Image: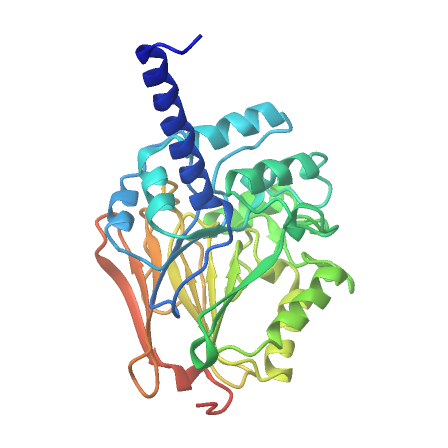
Length: 366
């Protein structure tokens, strides 16, 4: 029996729906490929799935080449994986998140709240299940090593060709992270808290690490890959020291090891971007390095923290309202020009640093 006209119409409509769904899914299913070297990279962190995100409207007007989510992309804070999945779904249902992912290639790393629980590390019992939820949400290709590698979801991306390559490195600071050292409740309440500092002190154990040795071997290999600019996209602050909150400073052997490798291999054009803090700032370190290291901390897309910790490496002022970061690269110059920006909810520049690429190079490789 031939189908009726109505049935044919229904079948055609369903086919169009399936095609549209597949097309939309495929837009997210592959690693972001950029046709040319990126000129505008945006980044941010700390996006609570149950809060309004008006800042995304400004971000979606930017026409960026890439957006990097730096962690705490949801606030899961649970061992219940259905609860975690529901929170990812609520973030994904945000119309402005949908618009961002349709218009702009996005990549992501996690921090503690989307890893599983506040300040969690290697001891978190649900990290395998959490890994799958996170990677599925960000549409990681199913054959990606990030699903199966034993030491976390760290990864790297190389964008551009020949002389204008931009290498984005995303370490995993959760999967292997050793125990934090706590100063004690009384010490925190009486000495740290009045100074807007957190409860942690450096773990000085020789082998204490956030990354673990296998990830360190991977990172050392990545640092040796040729590129014009290397962006280390860290979920935690790297340059600021002893804020008392989570940071690379709590694992000083890790921090020093990274600096040593950058110098050893004369790594070109390192720029650090980070999240987590619920405030934004820029930091600069020059001691015992071949060139100044700059870090832009952008946090958060929804979260704010008014009691900003001291940072002796801070350049300029901090912003303790919602913000996002921007990295601009002008490849048209003989010496490419780099602009680092922190922007507010309306897309206005709050803090800015400009520099030629040669100023963050161990020697002129042009």
